[in-house]
Image (cartoon, rainbow, N blue to C red; front, side):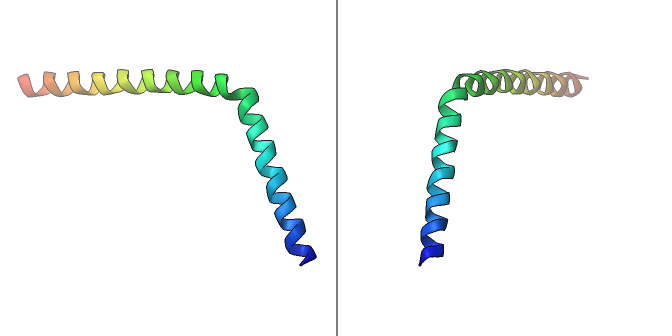
Length: 57
């Protein structure tokens, strides 16, 4: 049982470290996500325009 207790303690510690890391960096992550979303929307529009151009020819 000692091994299981150590394993659970390690898991809890890791989860806590992850939460702390997220709290410290969430603004950066959200900014990056917004940037990626903007790029994806641009790419989608470009593809749609290229398809329109090819179908009009």
